[in-house]
Length: 78
Image 1 (cartoon, rainbow, N blue to C red):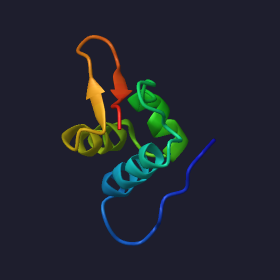
Image 2 (image 1 turned 180 degrees about the horizontal axis):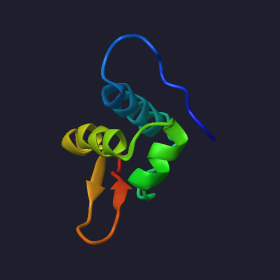
Image 3 (image 1 turned 135 degrees about the vertical axis):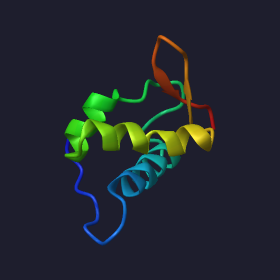
Image 4 (image 1 turned 45 degrees about the horizontal axis):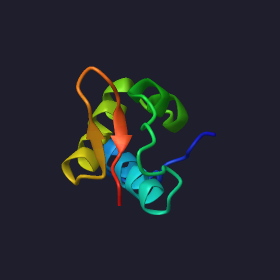
């Protein structure tokens, strides 16, 4: 599946971060499931790896995901 982000002015990584938060809130990305890798996110959103990496900072800062060092990032429990 590929996602098309809003083309209005603004930072693409912010739009992507908001969309990830929406996917978590609606349950599309379920608690305890791994978040797709930054490379996978870059592919499905059609953005650079750097933008995907930057976009994952917002959900992490809000406690929506948790990263286990040297492992993966997982969707936090609601």
